[in-house]
Image 1 (tube, rainbow, N blue to C red):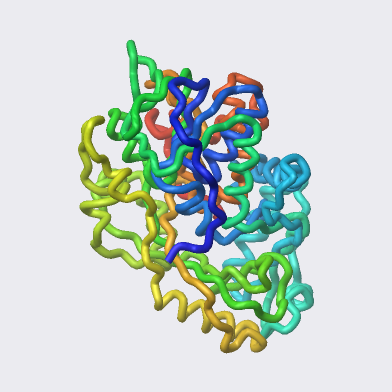
Image 2 (cartoon, rainbow, N blue to C red; image 1 turned 30 degrees about the vertical axis):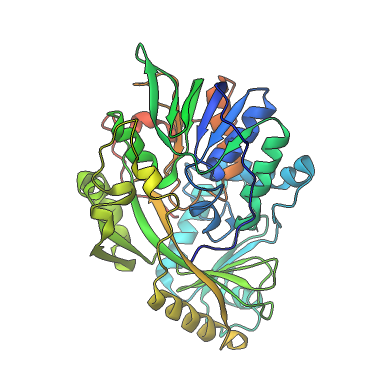
Length: 442
C-alpha cells in the first residue's frame, strides 16, 4: 500500500515545444524543473504515473550530511541549506525541520566506521561529533542503553516525503512549469544524431534538452536507445506508526532500526541495510560491476526470483513508439511490504524503547530503491546523445540531497557554472572503464 500523498493537478494539454522536457515527477525531476524555471527556461514535466508516486514518497524522510560518501558530501551540505530556503522562497511547508540526527550503537565495527568517516569528512567542516557511550545514552533518553558510542550531527534534519515533492511541484507550476501526469514517455525523438524531444503516449513534445529523472526506470529507457546505465534495484520496506511518545524529535539510527519523527506525531521506521533483491535480466547484465557492492551488503539482502525477471524496470522489454510500453503497463511501482521486516522493526523498537512497546502500525509500504555500484548518483550530460541529461541512481539518498541535485542538474542543462564539482556524478564513469569499486558509508 502506497503512503498517503498530497495530490497535484495536471495541466490540460501537452505543449508542442519547450526549452526542456523533464521525464519523471519525483524529487530529482521536480527539483530540477523548479530550478530551471527560476533560470527562465520553459519546462514540461512528464510523469507516467503521479508526482512523487514512487520512491520520492516512500523514503525515510531524512535530510542528512552525516555518513554520506565524501564524494557526495558537498552536494548534501548544499542541499541542507537549500531545504531551509525553500519554505520561505515558495511559501509552502515541505515539512523540513532542522532537528539533528543521532546514531547510537553497541557494535564496535559501526563505531570504527563512523570514526573513520569523521576523519575523512573533517576537511569539509561539517558539524559532527563522535559520542562516548555516556553521551549516546544522554541523547537517547528512555532507551535501553548499553551503547558504546555514537555520532551526532546537530545541523541535519528531516522532511515529509508525502508533502515535499507535491509542494515543490506546485511551486514550479507557479513559475510556469507544466505538469503532465499519467502520461508516459515512450522514447526519445532524435534528429541528425541529436535529441530533439520526446514521444509520449499522447504525442510529440519538442525540446532542445531532455532531463531523464526516471528513478528505477532510467536504465530501461536508456537501453531502448542503445545507452548503458549501470543500475540495480533493491525492494525496501518501511512503515509509519500511530502517534507515540516523543523519544526523538529528529532522526535516530540504532543497530537494527531507524526512526524519524513525523509531523503527525508518529514515526517513519526503516530497517537499515535490509531488503529484497529479485534476480533480473538487468541484474545479470550488470552483475560484475555490482559484485563488490553485493558482497558488502549481502548479509541484509534476501535474494529471490520474481516478477522482475519478466516485468517492470529490470525485465525483458522491447517496444515501439506507437504501441503500449512498460511505462504504461506499470504506472506506479507499488511493491508489497515484507511483513517479516515490519515485525522485526516493531520488535527492535520495543527492545530499544520500552515506551514504544505495542506501538501500532498506521501504514506500511514497499519501495524500489535504484542503486549504482558506487552508490553515487549520475547527474550529467550524456555525451553519446547530445541534448540528453540524466539525474538518477540516487541509491536511497535522492530525497535528502534532492534540492541540490535539482540545482546541479539545472546548472548543467542550462550551461551555467555548477554549484559543486560535477565530476563525481559524471555519466562517463559508467562507460569508460572507471573502476566503480564499492560504496562508502550510505
